[in-house]
Image (tube, rainbow, N blue to C red; front, side, top):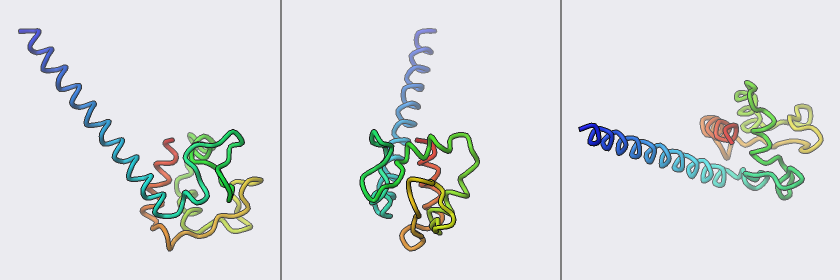
Length: 122
């Protein structure tokens, strides 16, 4: 009897893990597609090269952004940077990227927020 209960519990645990893994992969694929469709990948890579940059035009890779801002409350600031751009007077990555152009035409604020959340979890 205990063996049957353990077997049922184990099967439930495996199915739960499989579903969670599938949802995570699905979200990852959705965000990668959104980033590609929105033009983010023209400047950003997912993982930094040895110098911490993606290919020209140079922009920080998402894992470098996530590392730099880990544990900070920067979601709203980064969403604003994505949608509105940074402008010459509001550089958020000094010494690497001069400015980031506005992207409101390419990506909605809602999608920008989803992308920023995804990037910060890298």
